[in-house]
Amino acid sequence: MRLKVTAQGVTIPKKFFENIDEVEIRKKHNLITLVPKVGKNAVFNIGSNPIECGTPDASENLDMYIYGTNK
Image (cartoon, rainbow, N blue to C red; front, side, top):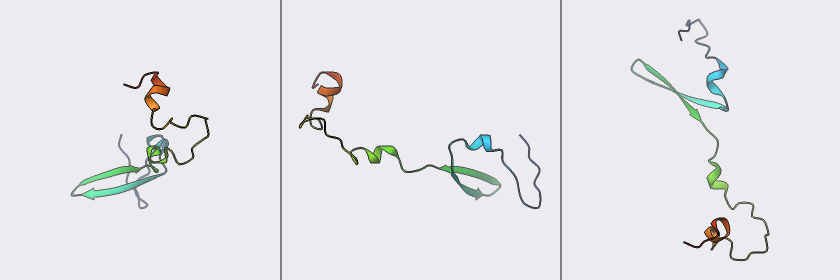
């Protein structure tokens, strides 16, 4: 795809940025790179809002409850 550079710059189509709210623009020599900035990784939120399930050892024996084995 080729885009015309205007006095305002270049407009990149929104379809290239699905589910992206922010990008970091980097320029090194003649190469311009857009790096998507994603939100906080959901993995870091695991356990932040625990629920009561009546199983006091669920966190210690997770595999047993998910897979039926403690291997």
